[in-house]
Length: 278
Ligand SMILES: C[S@@+](CC[C@H](N)C(=O)[O-])C[C@H]1O[C@@H](n2cnc3c(N)ncnc32)[C@H](O)[C@@H]1O
Image 1 (spheres, rainbow, N blue to C red):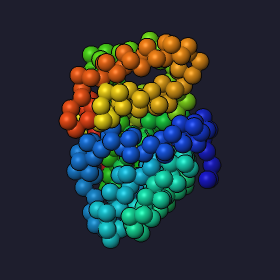
Image 2: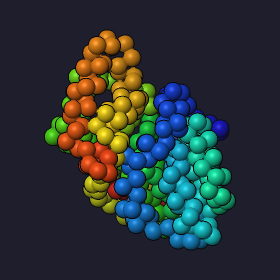
Image 3: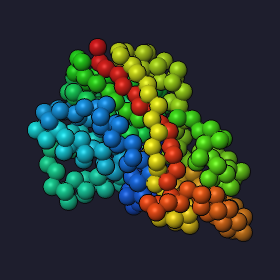
């Protein structure tokens, strides 16, 4: 991997949280797959396009992009080697050849100048210590008229379905896990505009998108999954086992209202951001 500016993120995403994500890729994907249609509609990837997927993780949307750019080429960049290993294995298994995965810090990675027609990201652009530098670096990699299309989380509100369903955990989650630091850096549309303007983008638009996020087969399974994720594991590691068990049961009960015949489905909200290289 060439230079790294975000050493904290690199350590976190190459540590136990990145490994956990890679080992449970299907479960993490299930939470966000319902957002894919809107992302791909906005990205409008052509069959000859050169596409960059930033913070591609285990590569679900990188692979989808490669199928759309069937005569083009797709590069997935991520700072996490365990997650990239999963992505490379899936690409090989699916026989997708017009794809390449590179380990790197997207804030400083030497992308080829104007080398991409479209840059996409699903939740991979919030973790930079210097957001303006990172987005400027990505812009440099886009050709004139090239487009950036990404999704990132909206700020959580106390009356959201997720907050209601997971209220039992709230008093126990005191700080973000190492990989989740930066997760909230682009939740305000004003901040997104400020960063993209300063990074030199044109035609910035920000649209709210909602979709059903699938957390598991039933409430008990979803509670297990949420407790296995970085934020819960990090904050609960030194908590008394009896308290954890009580939280698990209360969490399960909080998830019951969201059980459906298609799994535990909770509405999530993201920003769909579009911008272009002048
Ligand atoms: C929330 S995950 C999203 C992964 C993937 N886009 C998806 O939708 O499944 C965030 C990803 O950003 C990556 N990441 C964090 N900081 C990064 C950086 N500075 N450069 C490149 N990737 C980074 C992480 O390793 C992780 O794979």
